[in-house]
Image 1 (cartoon, rainbow, N blue to C red):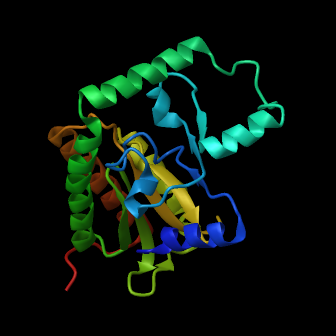
Image 2: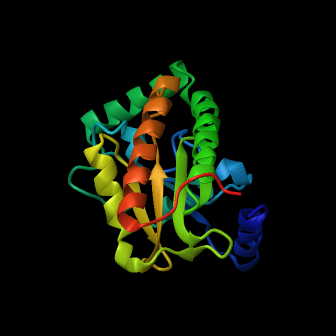
Length: 230
């Protein structure tokens, strides 16, 4: 909700707690800003970034911290924790190339623009599929949730196994979606739709066609109603 992260920042400052943002998925421009936290106008003390940072080609991650934190650690003996493959030159070269391409192709702006298109198309599915309870996200980091009741957001019956079944159906139709469990991992079914930042209008069309076909099949198997909401 609006103001949530700012309030968290205030609480951390009041009690001397470091605010750490996990930007492993949201960092790198996918949300339409380089950092997802920029949407909340909040500056953390430490940021973790990975995944898209390496363009999906090599394993690469980084921790970014305020200079005041780094200086204190260095004065105490430095960062003693490390890994054998840390600072791998191939991975770092790939990461540098990714950052250059993000800037050269103006991919952050494109992610915001294409994300608006994707979100509107996903919202449009709610008229056809009453069991889509919500569409949420920023830029090209989008998700939708399947529910038994859109008003109360009651989850679908667990035995329908929507969490796994819709993913399998979509995969067989050439579409990869990423499912997650809500309600502490025990109930609820939401699915992430996160196309590459170079996605085109035609690519969005292809995603939506595959997703609609997948939802049709799942609804048929699960005995769920489809059609326009009245």
